[in-house]
Length: 341
Ligand SMILES: [Fe+2]
Image (cartoon, rainbow, N blue to C red; front, side, top):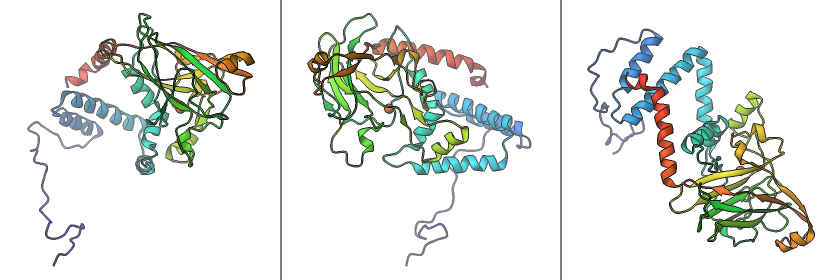
């Protein structure tokens, strides 16, 4: 007969508790009688990490986490509140909702990682956060066609060219683009979504040009009904993103660009809840009040439309790798004293 043990194991499978096989350190480790000894001991231990990059990351992580606790003189109640907050943040995640990424976003960490991994160089178009609303099922859209079904918002025409840093056209680039409708919702936020809307996939021709019909995107709130929403309220921060048009551009031999364009004039431009806006990504939309031109561009109701005209400049993989290596080198140089510890 099988009987359950204290910890839910069957007695057939219960084995003696064993260590992970790593022996105690051979170096001197004083008993942790003071805050300084705790930090010093842990730094000695993580100094044994075999993977050099991981060792460096652990050393800097320990240095800053321990400094944070000491500098704030963190109380036990505050520490428990943080543990409880992080626990709930993890528990809020579902296959359709990523509260941990949202936490990273509102703390500026996602934007910071993006910036470090996509440094500004050679006049190339800057990166912006991907956000949680990208899907891979966008339909192919030919030159001049619409990514939005009729009635989804005010007309907007988007056009430009994909270029190298030398100004040469990039043919056969794939552009994925997505945006909110006039309600400030992405198609995935509608329970009755039957097909992709306000999103499309385009390919540039030999001259690197692209053009498509869309709608003027709206400012929208990031989810405010979870732990991250509570965090923002506790800071007295709003949870809005300024209106924007997402674009992801890929071409053979070029570094993949994930970006977004932010029309000038939005009230939330300078306080984007997720820090996605960069000066070079703020664009002007031209108001075109020309019924003939609107119909010529394929807008069924004619009248007027906004024109968003902007070229996109890509870095080659080679250019991107060289710049990134330089940035990493400069950052690690700052921590050389720690690495030698
Ligand atoms: Fe977005």
